[in-house]
Length: 238
Image (cartoon, rainbow, N blue to C red):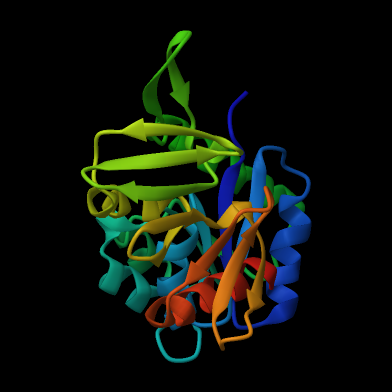
């Protein structure tokens, strides 16, 4: 079964973000993984949440939508649908390789046409890779959406899927470069966490922070990683 496409909604107006959510609810196969209010939050969420699609307001406080793409570069952006109340940005939007350009307020019919275009673009994009691992029953594919967290093990990495684990011959540092685009975030120097597997962040008695996963696993968050984690969790829950 194909995975749901991950969607980020970026607009400084809560009503506009809510409107996109409501329109998107009529289209199966998409899940909103986060919301952002300004360009700085978008840049952080792109790394932390690894969306496939972003609805991006052009005019936001601080960095606008075009600033986000310029800093990120078009090659490293997911599929982009611009949102705006003004029509004069259209040419520049398509120069930025946007999939579509929506004028607010957006009708259901216009949104449906955009989603058909999005579906074609995403269908042509390569699927996120999984891992081929060896088990007593032979080789199997471990999909990224099934991995809860990844632990460093010398020159190897240990993929945790529930209580089961699989070793792959790749360092955690090398994996991180690829995995952040698919919703994984560094917790400390020896662990990456898939944010969709996170149940809650809890404070500890020694002024620490621990990530509690849906499986019950508890992974400490290093002090230097706390801000990125807090930002990612806020983006998911807005």
